[in-house]
Image (tube, rainbow, N blue to C red; front, side, top):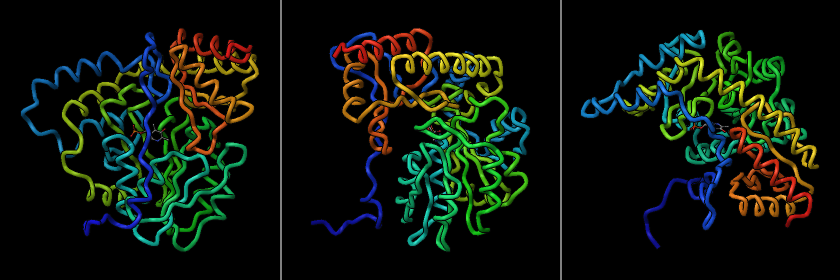
Length: 361
Ligand SMILES: *Cc1c(COP(=O)(O)O)cnc(C)c1O
């Protein structure tokens, strides 16, 4: 027994499990388990990253002014109300650190992203899970769960791992109905994949109690660099900046992210290819008897008849060099989350699932 013990809540955190990336004894493996961009980042981003090598003896910018300006230009947002973090995970951490303590409650949905629970527990707070309706966010279930102790509501839109989303009118209804002591956090990790969706920016501009988180890890193909950002009312961004370390983002990460967001052609190509391939993959799986909800993100949630069938299919896909994501820890043991890869990856997945369903076990 040691007298050195962590803060309450810390030992309740289950370690985050990332998507697998290799299979022993199988070559030509395709990783479709972490919703990464199959086309990789913009060439301009890679070039900016290389150029940053010449400045490695210098500390990076502390205020991220250039990156915030670029984000502001592209999205039509006030750079003064943007904060950048080491992935949007860090923004989620800042929010919990700044607003949640022992006795406080944080609401997330049934199949919601694991980091909401992890960051809440790390801050000493209590995660409160609310049901979804057939794998879709249920605004009324969220509102029913609010108490005097509720501090934050985390909502991914589009959601992961379901791929579903709710419309802007529903989001506005939630924002309007929440009491003034509750901050609504709209996680827009996949917002870039939805044409014409602002991720909740207009809602934020009209209210004092809504923020959004965004990332360079998905559409921009920079998951390895760890860059994300948040946008919200000035007083809240000021609070988050107090808990942010001054040098949280490296020179290379800042430069690559700025180049990535300025390369609109690459972003648009990745978005439209994803939309096309996602529709093709969903239909091909449906033809093999594997349905999925209409996805608005860069993955689909394939539904099987049972947890056993999903597990068997996952095992078969592995023998074919295809790594997808089991989502039992998200209370979806009968499903597999499959990232939309490039055309050849989509064909391989569809073919393998067809073989599996046809009895190739
Ligand atoms: C991938 C993902 C993130 C992004 O995490 P980063 O830390 O920015 O890489 C955030 N929220 C959800 C729901 C995600 O799926």
